[in-house]
Image (tube, rainbow, N blue to C red):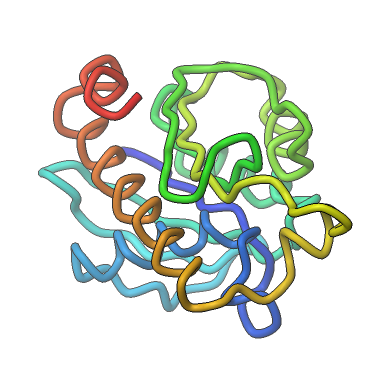
Length: 185
């Protein structure tokens, strides 16, 4: 079983923001595989189903970004999911919009949502897919950049990253992380 976690903030206020790229990838996977995200438990909205022959749980923590790990660890423990089968997808300012990167493990870097996940799982050893959102333009603060509104032209570019991230997760499930990294990195 896989736990696929998208990091973001509760969608009502933050839906079309750069910081919710993880949620957007989860929404696309749910759409693609007809998995309903209509259940709530452990501070998260989730749905379960089958992706490429494997049982998955798609999770969007509802704790706000900086406390995402609280929800993730509850699902991991309840469903007894191995850490190598937890895939976390999130936004990354160090990648341009439309780009993605897959890693088998690694530090959280400056991303507070990932810091929380690493802290609560007590390990950096789980796969992650980073979705590029680019750095803020001159005179724009980071917070404004990640949770601010996005124009339609940039949104199209961000959606390219969402699609690539979805395909990368499918590849990880079908053929393993090494194959996915070779194809998408």
